[in-house]
Image (cartoon, rainbow, N blue to C red; front, side):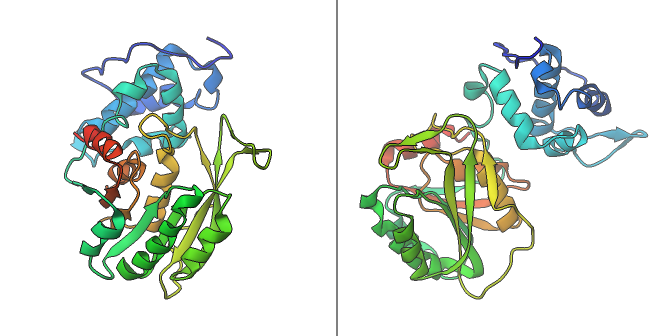
Length: 307
C-alpha cells in the first residue's frame, strides 16, 4: 500500500470494545504520512469516527466517567483536523458516499424548519431582528441577479443588529452583486473559497477557476465577530451528488461555528442540496435552521436525507 491512498470496498464493523488512548497512540505517529496509511490504520480511523460521532461513549479515567470526547477532539489529539481526516476517509472508503452520515442527516433534538417555495414570500413570516446569521449560496447566472436585491432588503429586516449575511458568489457578475448588497447592508469583508482537486473552466475568460468569492455583509452597527478566521478557506471537491450546484460542507461548517453561537438561528433562503442544513446539524452543538428551496425536486431530495 505504500505511496498510494488505500481504497476499501466494505465498511468496517464497529467493535464491542474500544480504547480511546490506544487508538490515538496507534494512529498519531502515521497521521502525517497519509500516503502510507495501511488498511488497518484507515479502518481504525473510521471506527474511531463511527464511535465518537454516532454513539454515546464516555472516556473512563480511574473508573470515573468524564464528558463525551467528540470526533473533533480525537482528530486534534492525533495531530490533525476533523475536516482533513474526514476528507481522507471519504477517499478511502468506496461506499462512504452512500452509507455514511452526510448522505443522510440525523436530526436529533434540533429539527430544522424547511419549506418548499420562493423565499421572497416565505420570509415574510420571519419577525424583524430575529435571525442570527444568514448563510447562503444564491444562483449565479445573470437572470437571477435581482434576487440579490431582494435578499439584501429582507436581510436588513430580519437580521439582528450587528449580525451577518455571508454568501458565496460567482465572479462574472460580482460588481452587480456587490451593488445590490450595498444597497441595504454594510460591506464587511471579501473572502475566498479555494477549491482543491479539479478546477472549473470558464471559457468566456480562458480561466481555470479555483477561487470563489465569499461575501461578508453586516446589518449595522459595525460589530466584529469574536473569533478570528482566515479569509481564504480551503475546500475539498464540491459536493455535486445531491445538487448540481452543491458545495463542500466543511467550509460552511467553519463559517457557522465562527459567526454564530450555540442556540442561534441560521437562515438559508437557497437550500439547494442542503449544505447549510448539513453544516447546522454537524455543528457542535447543532444550530437551529430556517431554510427555503423553490425547486420541488431539490427540496424532496433534502427531505429524503433527513432521518
